[in-house]
Image (cartoon, rainbow, N blue to C red; front, side, top):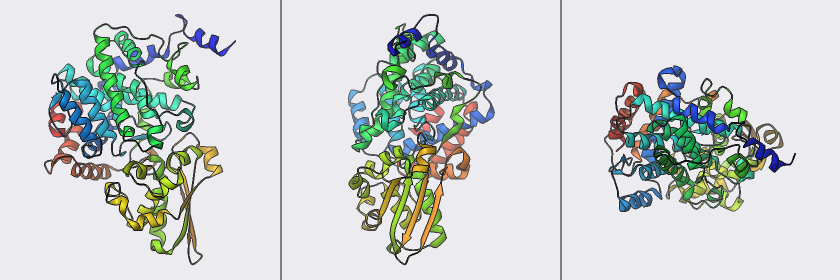
Length: 476
């Protein structure tokens, strides 16, 4: 049977498309029936995403986007984070999604290699405000639906980001955001199918923005949230979308991913086992593919406590996709000129970590990029593809094997497979609180000193919050 005929066979009416299962799950999920561990994980994601948005509000490109939204104005439906004011829900979702991702500080699924909260949370909040008086429990359900759809699609994909040319955060986030927004707006399963079919017409998200250090890297997830909020409103008004969204003859799996997707990974135990529990959280505001190298270098630094001037070279072994993501072009990664280039540079992040013994948002600033001491050590960092790591971890966020050669002949080595923030090496509640407070200090405008603490407390009891406007008052 030809591949085209096989694809057509999957579109037969007697072979329901995966969208049926996903739509039913998203439309009917109920926070009251979720395991407490799942509820806690979703609240963690909401807190982390909103905290990242506070810091992202001052990042480059966000002022331009928020200014454009203000210029457009329109019906006041949903809040813009930090800046305040109400705007059309889809426009609020766009800017809020952009600022949530702008610092590259948000969650990562280390197996799927994507961020899930930056599309789900802004879309759910905007659609919830559009509906009016959305409860905290319903927000939890909506975000859980969005996270789960994005994460399951991510682990089902069998082609890595570099080979595909897509960034899965936004590409798959269109569907996760639609699940979240649809649940928040109260779509039926049939309406949810149409919403997925409608948003399929908008799906996008390329990897070239990372290669070129484009500020669109941080705005693409917001476009996914925006399209999702539009899609669910159209579905609510009776617009029919594509019906064989994923497995049809011209469905998403064939058109975008050459049918290299295992649909059963998405279907199996949907609603009873939650892939969102495998999300990782970031202690450093940069590409997740740099984190294992950062952790390894910080561990080695603590062992010897020697100055950078003693170092002859630092070799860092990673996967082939990781190498493409954060090690090339070599001249760019060795001496980044923009914040995005620095966020995607193992040489820069490793050097900064050794010199300062930590890595934070101050390193990803115009001032940080001018530091001669960091750039000098970065020039001695030599990344390479480690054959063993690539064989075992090719489709995952890369581990790192680090070997530091000192000028006096001493060599030290280390390796980290699960960087800090992974479920097997999780951040503590105290570390999340520190991150939230740090994020609040970088907001685009001065916020009350207790903003982070109030956000932590309110999200902590979210299932008992009657109206999410209580959360939005803190954010806006």
